[in-house]
Length: 510
Ligand SMILES: Cc1ncc(COP(=O)(O)O)c(C=O)c1O
Image (cartoon, rainbow, N blue to C red; front, side, top):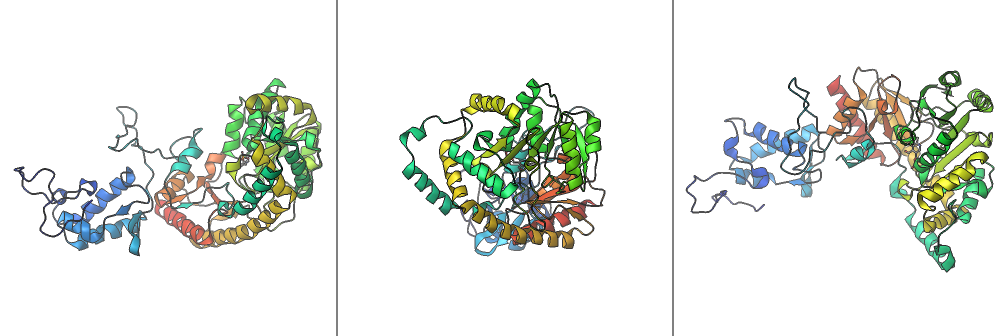
């Protein structure tokens, strides 16, 4: 878009066209003649809002300067300034001194209400398909991808550690050392159970940090908990297990993996002591997926009495799948050893580096009950012949040299500051809300008293430029609305700003 000086006329055609000169801008093809008399600022704000909604103006794009746009439209500069001010109030744009005025948030695309004449229609925009709102209807298989792709300036979705702290230098150093000592043969196909060196290092790590005693040969290296559940599903089905009971609420993501494996996921309520074992018995399920160290998403720690009840349930023939997803992140409470430290025969343990280092590494481990070890090794072999070897060896070295522990200590200190910032912000901006599960992990669950569906609140938050997950995504049983808020990945300032916007969104809806 070129700047237009006073007196110039911008037309859509050539100088020889007979049409009267129009006052317009290439920018969004705005024409001041379209504005109703006396309502130019309103008209302009509305046109810009529409362009942000249908993504012709993407988050991050810069609006023309007020001087340039006013000149192009032949309106006073005050008209453009007023329109930009309104968008800033909505939270859609932000003035950044030298950086100009920048789009910082887009409202989610809300489908039209179904009409009597048929299903809702969506108007195709001129520039590609309309992005879907992740919060419409039941969350589908790709809901986390859709949410990840949504534009927002602050991301409070749970499940990520502080990724800006990834130990790049230590990783590079370890990778150099590994490559220097690697033989040519090491670069061939490896053991589908994982590199022996990493299985040894994981065995030592789990002994130190989770109280688990296991031989390296009892460990299978996998591509995260996600793959552990995917590999486990057919093995359980072959054993006549058709469903794995899950905590309620519990991670939608892990449930999706089990369902894709053909397993039912009957819900079992949790309380402050963990899963209700009486309710588990009532389901008749032969297997259960649990997060005993830090229940996802409520944060409850399974109490001693519940652990004993669970061991009795397992002794009666049940299988426990222990998802130890973020147990290393503890702040205000003593370490809780993994259930696997008490039970080996009837328990399948899973963990990963997703919350320790980065989900993108896709490295995790499982310790199957001995009777399933061969079947799971076979499942891993036929799936991918084993994880990539180089990252396994680098991780092994980080574990052997104490770098991973050092990294975890650094993360803990940062995470505590971020968690405290989030609790303070919730207290200040979501009055009456209750914070759950603050003593450990990377997220908080916040429930609130207002009669506002949490999917609507999450959608409104996204419109304010903040991403989070509604608690109802993680429920199969009815329960209070709430939000699951990750605090680990962003600095305290962004967390405070994000929660402030959540408070604004909740006030607008209640
Ligand atoms: C409850 C739960 N389990 C497991 C995981 C980790 O999965 P993976 O190890 O496949 O990255 C997550 C990630 O967010 C989670 O929330």
